[in-house]
Image 1 (cartoon, protein in one colour):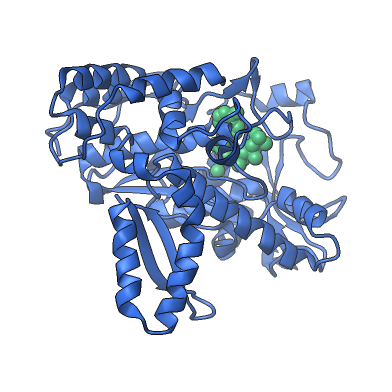
Image 2 (tube, helix red, strand yellow):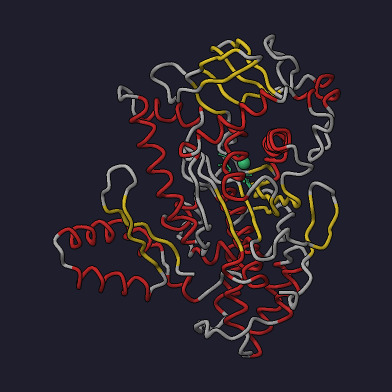
Length: 469
Ligand SMILES: Nc1ncnc2c1ncn2[C@@H]1O[C@H](COP(=O)(O)OP(=O)(O)OP(=O)(O)O)[C@@H](O)[C@H]1O
Ligand SMILES: [Zn+2]
């Protein structure tokens, strides 16, 4: 530490590129909003996963592998999930249907991002495991006069009082007055201010819900309910990274209202000046100039791209998609096309498939990434290194997550991994440890690391997997 290059990043909060100084260089802390698990991730969702994976790798290189904590959550409670569960499993008890939807989607997400060469985050908390933390933050907002209980159309709600925060709107540079005048937010009678947003809302008996007692003006109000989306990230980031941390990331679309409201909740509850010092946002993956999104219906899922012939009449290796993304600066929009993937594939074809031998990455690649994650320049340097047969090539490629190991993680292997894990669990049950160990080692040689553990509730043996770091 101290020896490394100066890192500079563009900060959405200040609209400036500035040198990055971690609060504690022994524990650099980053939070990135993860997926809402109701549907397969599309290519647009892949972008933040890849962009912040490169940042994670860079930080690990500069500060040391054990000195970076990367948290990316799983949003597994959301009304979009309820709607999908009702649609896909009519007749089934709603909570059971929700579990089916979220477990399947989460497993697919892990497969997808692993196939794109993304390292597993240090912690991947689920919203539903952090309800207690959310309730505590909401209570502290009530105590400090930043929240209130109101009777909404669908029952009781606890709302954040935007007018109670003098500098609400700093990140998105929106003023409360503008929002009222613009009236883009539907005026709801029970809200003191149209911009006030839900922290907690009442659930029907068959909807996902948790009992919670809130106290407002000395009165206890019990609301069996569920959290709003924004409070989830405030709770999980505080739990794993503290009241104030270094970096918060996500796609551009999250600046408002999601990140603005995370900031409002966290700062008002903890009495801090900032939630995170550096806010980084990736640009959109677009199709014919429009954001790729589920609601637009113009999306290609990562799974379709990697494992079917739906895009361009063929399947594509994960590494090609990853490189295609990195050939555009993370803040620029990307128009997604077959041509772009072909371009990335042609480049990769010219590179040697040598193992990362642990040698040092090139200074020029590090310098490019240190300059607001300039992956475009980094890829150019990498290509030059490949052409020159330079020994730094392998480690430099690895810094971008373009490792020979990722190359071996072909979609067929990733597709089969869950079945292999199930088979191995059977072997462990039968005490056939030698064979189970052999499978574990074989997968490790292919870059997949198995992790054996126990389910907290059932005590049953469970095995998860991730890309070997
Ligand atoms: N077209 C896109 N380009 C880049 N990033 C995107 C795009 N669409 C979503 N993201 C990012 O993906 C991450 C996961 O978001 P989330 O799961 O909430 O997606 P979503 O809201 O379901 O997607 P959609 O916008 O299609 O409805 C967020 O950081 C979001 O900003
Ligand atoms: Zn979030």
